[in-house]
Length: 374
Ligand code: NAP
Ligand code: HSE
Image (cartoon, rainbow, N blue to C red):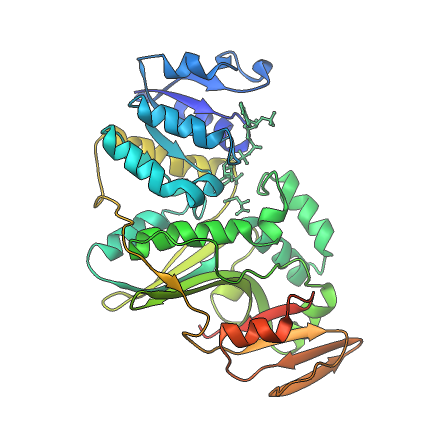
């Protein structure tokens, strides 16, 4: 099968490297701005679109535009598309699936969640037998790398962040990794496969960049490790989801997920808990997921068709949880406990809803952490 790669950065070059080792995939063209990167590069997308031999396009440029237009154009020209670009998929998945179906081609996106971990395929397989109760996990390699470096090596936030960037884990827009947009996108994509519905970016997302070395050390003394968690569950046609730091006891599996690794847990009746674990970011693991999608398309292995027609409404009152809010002043409110550590006050809430939590923190720049129930 002849393919084209859009974007020859970390992921695109990884796809090229693995494809070179396989007899049945030939990379015919690469779309890049910098033509000196590789001898098959072009900066004219029409050369790819008009090439009848190219059956499949791999999109790994990132960003919303022109990624959206390029994906749509490929599908409309009857070329299957494999993409790693969470941002564009979380926004336009409905259009991509519809256009692929109309043109009798495939749109696949395993690499967009969990990098090298086949977790979307896993979610689809569980869901073709039964309903999924909930999913939660560490969905971002960069933020996990930072938290792990702060916890184990006691490095500062920005020193750890610079290393994650050098290793190719971070997004071009860093805020996506540390302010939670990347995890939000991955929750939206996973939700689509777990619950057959396309939700919007309307659930709470708390940044992880407010966490300091002092917080990590305080939580360590309490027997907790902080991890950045995305999660979602439904009740009827309402759903609850969030992206925020969670505290895990030190012996929990999540607490021991190191470096750029991710762990995504899916709960259902017959399976109980299934945990998908592996490298959630990086050149070759992510490229491996892309190549797996290409091979599935080539060999016409197909999971159940993806349907995202069900409608869900976000509710901030569905369930109650316990949270810790850290500020440098004592807050008013009916807390279960307040600890003082240096200049920091740690307020432990009773079981409250997301709506109550949002009222308590009122968009202030506090550190907000959930006490994990897992
Ligand atoms: P990257 O290293 O920045 O690579 C993107 C490449 O695409 C760059 O070479 C860029 O060129 C090129 N590009 C961007 N816009 C272009 C355009 N309009 N025409 C031609 N070339 C263009 O990014 P990456 O880390 O490989 O990530 C790519 C995508 O994969 C993103 O959506 C990301 O979220 C996703 N992803 C990444 C990872 C990971 O571990 N890195 C894992 C899973 C998914 P310039 O640099 O010159 O702009
Ligand atoms: N920047 C992302 C991460 C890449 O660190 O998880 C993988 O999606």
